[in-house]
Length: 302
Picture 1 (cartoon, rainbow, N blue to C red):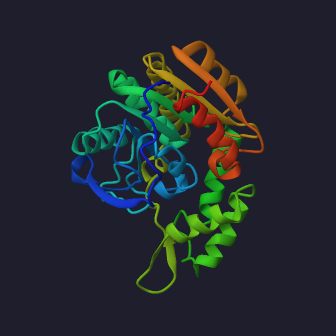
Picture 2 (picture 1 turned 180 degrees about the vertical axis):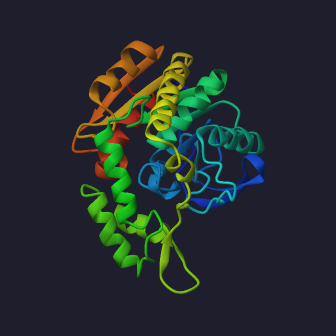
C-alpha cells in the first residue's frame, strides 16, 4: 500500500467519542489521531475498541486511526429491537463514516468485525484504500465457533449469574484467552464490565446479541449460514483494493485452506500473513507478530 502519509508525530492516548449509527443508535469509538487517510478498526464478537490498544498507537502517526464499538458491544448502545444481523452493522458504518467525514479508508476487522468489513467493502469497493481481515473469512471452522460460544457462556455472555468482580472476570478471560498477555487480559476486564443495580457486574456485550439466531431451527440456521457464506465470498470478489488476510498459525476458526483461497484466488490484490504463536485472537496472542504483519502491509514495507 502507498497511501500512508509521513509520520506527523507521536500518537496521543486515545480519546473517546460518540457518533450515531443506523436508526440513531449511539456508537462509541476511540480516536488515536486525526490526520491522514482514515484507518478504522473493528473488533470481534465479545470484544470492544480497546482490544486494539497495543496496535493502534503504532499506526496512528501515519493514519487517522479510529476504532468503533459495534452495536451491542462496549460502550455503544444496545438495540432494544435486537437488530444485530450483519446488514445493521454495515448500515452503522455507512452512517458513522458519513458523519465522521470518512470517505476513502483502510478497514481492519477481526472475526465478526472482519465479516462486517468484508460486506462493507463489497458494497462500497470504491471507498476502500485497503482491507485487512484478521482471522475472519466466509467459512468458519465449527471447532472455533463452538469454543467461542462456550467461552461466552462461561464468562457471563448469556443469562448467567452476575460476575462478582473485575478480578473474577480477568480469571475467566484468562481461561478463554490462554495465550493472551496479562496486560491484555487486564485491559479486557477493565473495559468489559458494567455494574448491575443489585450488585456485581455483567459483560457489556448485549446478552441478547444472538437471540434471533437461537430461535432458528437447525435447518434454518444452516441455510442462513450457507447464504451468508455465499454473500461473503461474493463480496470478497468485488474488492479491488490491496487486501491482507491475517491468520493465527494455531487458529481453530479460520482454516488454512480458506485463508489461502481468500488471498490467492478470490481477492483481486490479496496476500496472506500467518502469525506464529497465535490462535484466533491474533492481536492479543502475539501483538508483536500481528503488528509486524499489518504494519508491513499498511506502510508499504514489502
